[in-house]
Image 1 (tube, rainbow, N blue to C red):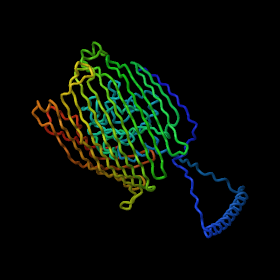
Image 2 (image 1 turned 45 degrees about the vertical axis):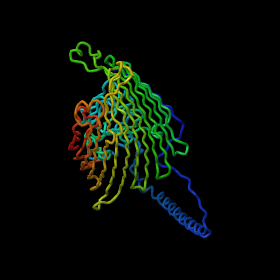
Image 3 (image 1 turned 180 degrees about the vertical axis):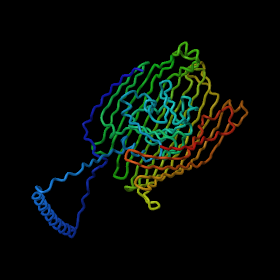
Image 4 (image 1 turned 90 degrees about the horizontal axis):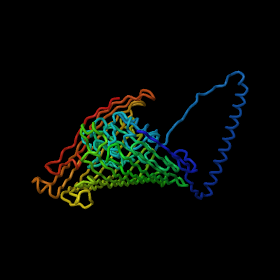
Length: 537
């Protein structure tokens, strides 16, 4: 596909922040006369000591000068000290290197140098990941080592847990794909299989975490434009910065894209996405972060063609083409409290309101209004001692509850907005919960043993209403609630600074999605899928 990209970055003229340190004014208090006298005595002593040191240094310098003819100069090796901000892709890569398994980081700035229309472009070259765009919309077939590959239907993704800034947008109903458009993303973490343990062991494929930009990582005003074949157009604008006192940062990004599509009657009429990110540092211990994101999409599905139709004209529309409109509104508040250099607590609450309106411009309709409520607690403890060895421990509590369901019926007349309801299903109360602990025990400077255990609750509630339970003669209600144990074990050996050997073994669980229950034959809830995964490398 032909592709054109233009981008302009405009600086703000704001001084760059050096390092993650903030300088706070010191409060001066009155001292007693006795304290002042003691201070004067200490100062007098320090002056005497300083004078002695200077004299010794001067004598040493004279001695070195006298003996320079007899000895040659000693040249020390160059020492290079390097580092990265803790919100940079480099810092994320260093963090994932400690995981005994396959995990990778994609720097989205590198992706945006070419086409960056959807997750297919972001994940195209990641090991073990299959990423295929369908229809030019944000709906992508994403599979990690075969997860969810036979359950995708271009509406709600399965088999992988998706997160934004560490907060889940996946839940009991799967993942609505509206928020998967890569807008305002700094970098993307891909954690295969059980390596996503600290993000909740709730998907066989693992987890994909999109970390958004802040005013510190993307300051200034930026605009970008892309264009290509089949009417593809994408435009975006962003603005970020930091307050004068350095305590508050802010970032706003707006995106719009559209395309005509290869197949007839399959245009993406519009993908609109807004990201707002605000952070504030109250003091050296307490930080707050707020994220708001809204995305909506309007497109048509050209329908499936037979082999004969493809040979005749691969761009023709099928008889079953239909329209679809969806939106998602995500709000996440996060507090981070640092007790000391070795312990940190994160508390977050996410609300994700979304809806999917299927079968537009047809004789029927199907709507899926839903709300995910996701509280999250993570506690990090480092530099402890266990069995006489250095130990790092993470405690996890992760919870996502679904309120909502689905309803459908007929459009009278066909293609109109006049709807006649005849069935519905309420999934409210369905939830996924994880309580876990993960420990990294450093056997020596090069070898680390990782062990973890999670207790996972899977609860699914379904109450069907309308004509379906009345005509089927089957019970229209299901209540499924079970707990499962999810263990994990891994070993890392850093052979050289550039070579790492690892192996890992763990259990993954993929809970059933609510919409996977057929309303015409509600008898019992399908159980979750399990996988035991090994990660040698």
